[in-house]
Image 1: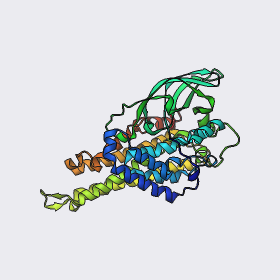
Image 2: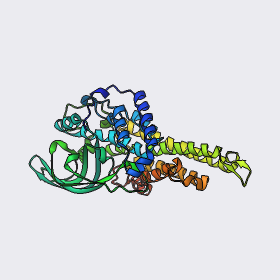
Image 3: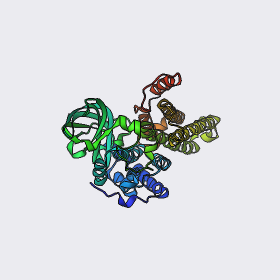
Image 4: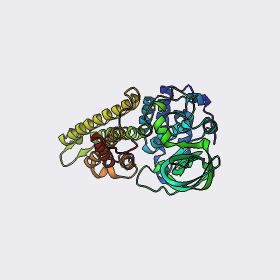
Length: 393
């Protein structure tokens, strides 16, 4: 399906937030169907398109709004209050619109002109052979979120370039040229539809080759005439690419705390003869998880501010610091969820309830390779002592 982006260039923050509310409410209404189908419904994706969420990060010179990062944060957090699988795609679909912004003009015009959704997987597990004008790509990639509804898919690999140098690239391939294996059967984030894709000797021209190292180092496309104000060009590539994971964790924890308060207020404990909100036990839990949530919010604000001020601060913030902030924040949110479910007891375990669903999805978010706190503290510790951790951010 194609869809023009020209009518979305003037989207305001208020319009996007109202759209996020509508998407979130619809996704929550259809959450159980998404659990069964292992994919959010086409209706939810179509609404994402209709309200402009999927268009947020298309550059202005390609007919999009190119919104500021802090607007993206607000929109994503809003959807996360309702359903994490829908939030996952409300993050990744617009996020992936930054990929063509680093391509040569021909590639930008082709992909943005087609107007479809983009999925990707950066894991460099594919194979590429250099041929005239591009690469022949083969391989099998798992965890390709949102591929069921995508028109394009970026796939990671390392291959020799035209100079004989081995480099990390992300060819962007039309969805019709690859095979999707529907193998997404997981504990949480089931609606993300993160299935497997397979390619066999698919030709991808140079105009659709995202060069990872070049994008990291220059933060600009390979040409002089580009959208100078595009937000992503002024921030570190991967720490910005990963910003949505902590935003979603905060949004989910916020909803879980609201549900905990609601359920605690109406819960009557026969053994004590009082409502649970009158109990010092639950009052203490409510206070402590609220403290932890304030800490998570503060860390998120610091993370976003470091991204916003990256160039102004001389590009000195190390990737390890971004990694450490992001994963510690996510861990705090998981701990909040665990405290809530252990305090509410068995009543919180019934399948399909908001506590149960958000908790499974939140834990699943924390298993993403960019959210692993053990990896982050190891990398950050190296950076703090002057060693090169080699982390992407």
